[in-house]
Amino acid sequence: MFNREFRKATIESMVAAMTGSQEQRLAWRGTLREVIETRGDRLQRDEINYLEGLIMILGDAGKLEEADAKIPDVYAEDWKTILEVVNHKMTA
Image (tube, rainbow, N blue to C red; front, side):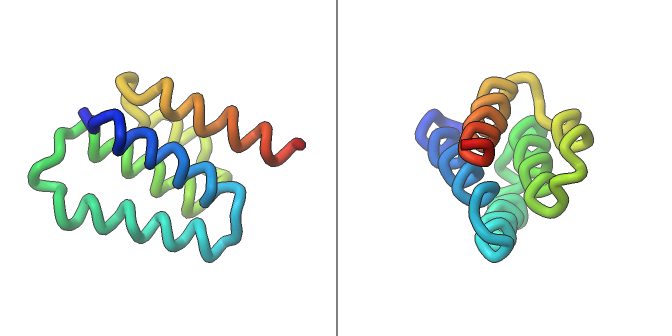
């Protein structure tokens, strides 16, 4: 499981990317892909699934259900936080 600092930074970066420009979404998506490519051999399956779910939603907001299904239960609270903050920012 990712440490608390990484999880917090991921939440903040996801919110910024999802409420920002397409360029920001693509940049963060590339960063997450790079984490998988460079550290994938040291990551647990749940960690990879979490990152892949985040990458999926950054690539296509229409894949929310698919991305949601990919997020492991251990990261459900992080995912819920991301969606709540993004929803709040987008409707404010």
